[in-house]
Image (tube, rainbow, N blue to C red; front, side, top):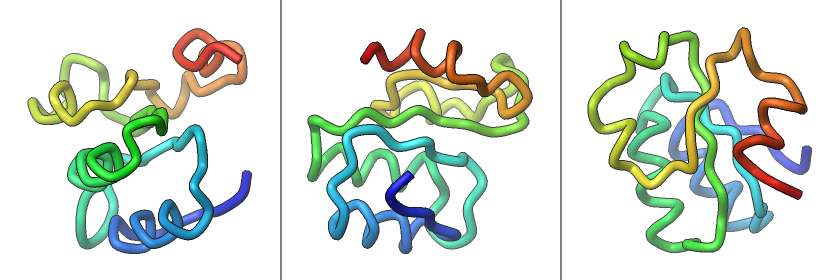
Length: 90
């Protein structure tokens, strides 16, 4: 891990500062939510991979979670290195 953010605005600043290749983005962030932050990050850093994470069941995701450009979604309780490698091959 190279950075952590507690808000969408902070996530945007950290991405600009650290230029990560993979981001685990919580959907529910204060300020700009994770879905909008993902949209903005990918607009300015299209080679970045963003995986959304939250406690939502996949069928309960907000509709815009499917159109924000994220590579995929992992429910927090299912977040394991193996599951992450399925979405982000190394």
